[in-house]
Amino acid sequence: MATTKLTPAKILRLGTGFWGSKTLLSAIELGVFTELGKGALDGEALRTRLQLHPRSARDFFDALVALGMLKRVGARYANTSETALFLDRNKPSYVGGILEMCNARLYGFWGSLTDGLRTGRPQNEVKTGGDFFRTLYGDPQRLEGFLQAMTGLSIGSAQVIAKKFPWKKYRTFVDVGCAQGGLAVEVALAHKHLNGGGMDLPVVQPVFEAYAQARGVGKRLRFHPGDFFKDPLPTCDVVIMGHILHDWNLEEKMLLLRKSYEALAPGGALIVHEALIDDERRRNAFGLLMSLNMLIETHGGFDFTGADCRKWMKEAGFKRTQVTPLAGPDGMVVGFK
Image 1 (cartoon, rainbow, N blue to C red):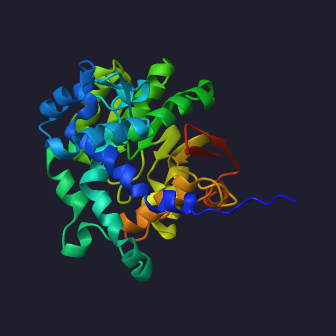
Image 2 (image 1 turned 180 degrees about the vertical axis):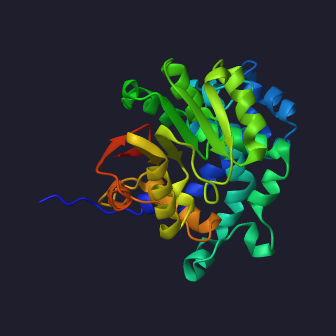
Image 3 (image 1 turned 120 degrees about the horizontal axis):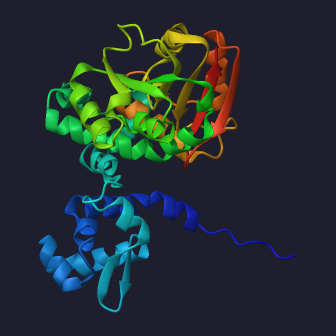
């Protein structure tokens, strides 16, 4: 009887996975995909444009080919269809902002994951007395870049929510923790009868309004300045929270769910969308790793399963709940009042 010979290949591939990750992140930082967005180049021309040392430039470019991030025809390098669309900074579909943040901040902080697992404490700027988010919100230029990155992270899910949720039954909505307004804009574009808005800290208002205006829905989207812990949520038919609940501990999660319930009109609905961990906690590795990222970044945040969120929603007063897959690892939990 034949037996499958075990090898350590999968273990080694995962253990050295940061090699490929950092290669991609450095390529984004250097502007490889943006430069090739202007046209294919041979290795020497690309190296010169990027001002790289000759020693390892060829290996760097060919590693990106082997990783599926570039293609090479003869001696000329070019973007793949995916990198041309999503990693060229000159295109509105650019999603590299979140990866730029991964490169500039999270890559280093994840090196302290073991310390976080032992102590339960964040491993970001807090360790040296800093506060990333307070500093970020005090710098308008950095803040705008961060908010754009959040749009890139959630735009795929936003487009699916705009299609899958029964918006015809409702007239008004508010995206709580709206950032640049990516989700609110996608919903408004898809449903002309809706009037909506976004709630976030006051400093976000000009970014939100400029983005909504640029996308042609500024007249139907209103910004609500406020702190969603300290201030009441705007009353509406549908409340949306995307990549918000996972930032907080369970007590804080429940407070936000109850505030959402109170803000909803009778028959209204709450949409929570996150990188939901599968109920068996076996398959959605991204959701589980995102939860570890909350350990790195927050004092008490964690990601959760759809079943977890449904249970919390019922405790908050919602009578009916459902879970729907979205784009990639994301899913949404809907609670109906």
